[in-house]
Length: 196
Image 1: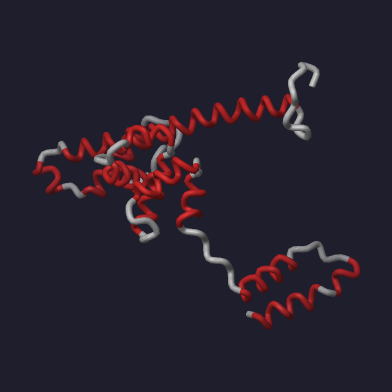
Image 2: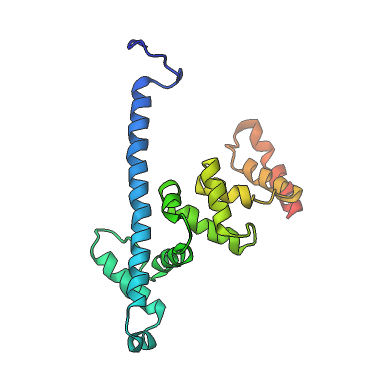
């Protein structure tokens, strides 16, 4: 507080606040670059497939095409960008194709990650939302992360009593059982076996 500013993070040192903000800005920029990469590769691969001559698409399956494109992409990097099986690239291409004609997609792409779009498709396929655009609109309005959007529309099932009890017993077995506490360990294990 030597600078005269009101320090709103009383338990975090100012240097750590600055460092966290700097790293968050850097990682946010990297996240946008990653999203652009996924959109660009998806668009490029879809366009390339669509422009292949019919005799080529009759001989080569789309899966083989994804594998070969993945190999070409990974050759240019020091580490694999996409899976060698073509699955990563296939998913990117499917997301791009699903949203290519969506009105206002450019605005949505500025505010939401590629993962938002992927999960919106999953939510629609599971029947959790009527259309992916609805999940995206809510996520943009509420400023949800992709995980928060998924949990909002498809919350996890709460564990039943049996699962909770056995979970607690498994957790208790991980304790450091020494001294007098060690006498209880056989009872915890026996109780867990009775419930199994």
